[in-house]
Length: 464
Ligand SMILES: Cc1ncc(COP(=O)(O)O)c(C=O)c1O
Image (cartoon, rainbow, N blue to C red; front, side):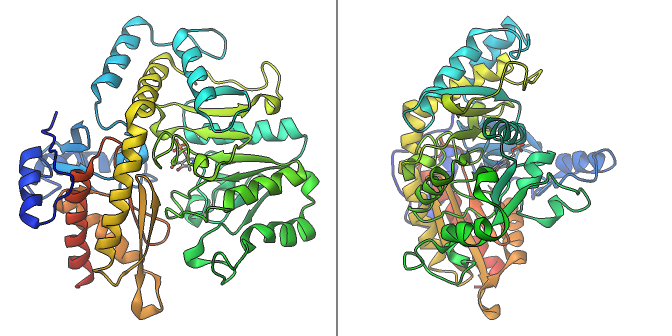
């Protein structure tokens, strides 16, 4: 493991250089992509389907904690965590050990039809950890999008209603049900229609660019009352609505943190009309925001909670966690050959053990430092219009001052590429947000190392 420093904060650039040397990352030995990375990228270019995104030419050889090493020996500090998946960092020994033991026992038996202890244990953990006091039941999937599709089926079956409300800017996945709820980029739906019928998108609680031109709290949550005033009064009777599906913090949509009273207002809207509240915590869950699930910050218990991504530190698994009273589908109504694979369940149990017993508190503590350091960096760069986040889910929205603060999309893309060349892995989101989502094992020194590079990168790309 890399050397851990006790110093909580690095104040000078020489402190940062010393910390990087002691930890062994970031360390750029050849400008990425180096020769080995380029060979892989070139080879794959004739093989991979054209739909892959490939944010930048990172070719990974290994990882350890918050560090990723490429095939040329460059070491990066990872502030994207495989898009929020490497929750316990790369190759955490407790998770790797659990995977190895489980793989040595058996690889598959099909949890839809049979039993094994790791699956029962994971259901027990998720039912206990899901927000709210009411008893829960669990269905295990292979991915986030599969959890979303399952939740749509369950919501329709349980309520006998057909209509679904989702939000502008939402990302819920790529399969047909989830894609129909997704509305973050038109490209993700282009040419794939028709979508699932009965889905209605409404503005999200995105205060920095409020759809109603208002500000919080004087807006009195116009974005929530408009659901009743506009959608329910004019287009869809609420008695036809099965579910409102919401990300407690929008992820791909731009790390949008709604006001504190937003989720409670959605909860009471649902309660007034017998609608199910589905919280998609696929990106915001498993400790990322400094609580096990982001809904806890608002004290809201959803009817259906969806999790995946960081649940097993990188092994493919997701879950639908549903209130027992809403689990109204019969045996055989839904299933999955691989869902809840035993090796993935073992990885998820090891992950949740680590998150519950330390990493969730670390994420809250380091997250406060990350938000403060991000605000500090923002204060030096006019192009950063907004800094927001909870725990280790922080976004910097880049704006173009010459265009009245319009989203600076090209700049955000340039930040991501330039940071990569300097040894920092980040991603963009929304129209022009640089998102920071390190593994939960990252500490204050990692934050200082990363934000030092981000500061330098912003200066370089914005010419400031
Ligand atoms: C909030 C949210 N929901 C659903 C998904 C889809 O998950 P998956 O890619 O595992 O299908 C994602 C993926 O980014 C997500 O961020």
